[in-house]
Structures are given as C-alpha cells and as structure tokens.
Amino acid sequence: MKNIVVLTSIESPALKNLVDTFNSGERFKVTLLATDRENCSSLAEAQELGLETLTIPREEWRDAPMQVIETLKGKDVEIIVLDRFLPLLDEKFTKAFPGKIIDIEECAPEEAPRKVTKFLTDTHSVDRQWADVLGLEYDAERVEQAAQAMTPPAMPQDAAAQQAPFEPHRPEPFRQPEGQQFQQPVQQPQPYGQPYQQPVAPQPQNFRSDGQVEPMPPTYLLWSILATILCCFIPGIIAIIFSSMVSSKYYARDYEGARRASRMAEYWIIASIVLGVVAAPFYFLMFM
Image (cartoon, rainbow, N blue to C red):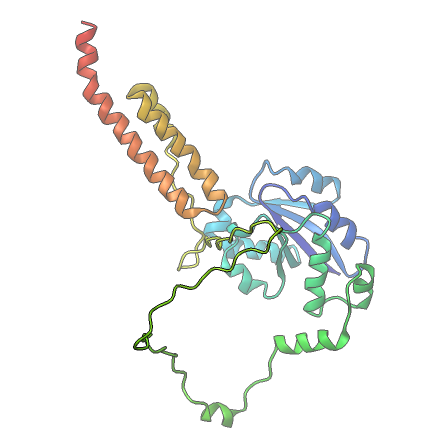
C-alpha cells in the first residue's frame, strides 16, 4: 500500500474524487491532507472522509523545507498530489520525492483521478488492473521501456574516457544577403468561423535563483489607511487601491505586477503625507 498526500492552500475540489477512486483499492490510498492555512475549507471535508490532516504555517514551507520534508516522510508519504499548491513548493521537494509529485491544478475535479493514475502508469507504478478500472490503455512493452529510460545504463569507462569535452554552440551572427530587403514575417490569419485565440504568455515562476520561494511584497495597507485619515484624502485613497492589488496579483502569479503595485502604494503614501504636512498650516490659519 502506497500512501498519497494531497497538498492544497485554499481548497481541493478533487479531494473526494481522489479518495473515492484510490481508497477503494489495495495498491494506493489517500491518507493525508496537508495545507498552510488553518482556515482551509478542505480540512473539514478531509476529516469527514477519514483522512489525517496536517497544518504547517507558510513560513515553514518557505524557510524550512527540509523540516517539512522530514515530517511528510515520517507520515510514510510516497506520492504527493498538488492542488493549487505549486507556488509554495520549494525545489528541494523535487529532489526528495523524484518522480512522485504531480500537479492537478488545471484538471477538472472528475478528471483528477484519471490524470494521477495515468501519471503512475507511465512511471511503472500501476498494474493492468488499475489501467482497466479507469479506462486507460495499458501497454506492457511501452511501460517497460519508460521504466528503463528513467534509469539509463552506465557509460563504459573506455567510452567515457574517449568522449570529447562539451563545447557550447555559438551561432553565427545573422548577415543580410546583398541585394535583398528584410521582409517582416506575415502573421497567418485565423480560419474563418473559428474564434480568435489570444496567445497565452508563460506564467512567471516564483523561484529565485537561490532556490527560495518569491516572498509577497509589502502591501502597506495600514499605512495607506492612516495616510487617508490623518493626511491627504485623495492620494491616500489611491494608495489603498494599490495596496489591495498587491495580494491579488501575487496569488495570480503576477509577481512583477505585485512588486510594482507595492512600490506605487508606497509612493502615494509619501505623497499623501507630504501634501498633508504642506496643507496643515493653511488649515490651522483658516480655523484660527
């Protein structure tokens, strides 16, 4: 029996489907739900389904990942399923659980068990019975080849000694042929009758170069409210608007936008304080 843990930050709509699928067999079992929030809505649902729950503060996921890894290993966790939890996961988890982490954030709740089972089938962890139950195509030869590809044979010593050192490829600079003019590539139009598909920009990653999770920029919300009440009203309102945008952009994975909103909130707080100080003598003279 291999234990599965579901990691979620807000809620896991696919939790019940995962439990109903895997806990009815004898090979895998969902035994634990882990989260970083005490008010996670999936905690009550997990307890009703008979799962063990574990709440670890977000600071420990970010600052002490090895301690969290040891805690999960102490629970005999072998497979990790991520449901809206990827931004909080340090790259040390990938090294601690190689080939055992799967993200189901973009899956519909009813499709999550199928994706997890296909992931396990491709990594040679599920037998033919599981493939038949969930309607997956089982190819023993393909699964065996995939398992062998995960552990390639060692290179012979004589071949390793004769292997040439690696040299990076340096492409030649572009040279425009003489007598020809540069032609701008023409974008192909969308076929008639089909809706326009807007290109999707890649989502920024939240891992820094040192492997740490990108922290949320300061919101300055309290300072914005104080600047609105005690200093100048209009700049303070603008500061509150930018302060409220920091957390929403951060959880939407727009980390550059969150940093920009934090800076703008700080600028408008300073503007409110400066205008309040400048206008204070005039208000004092008016009410004398």
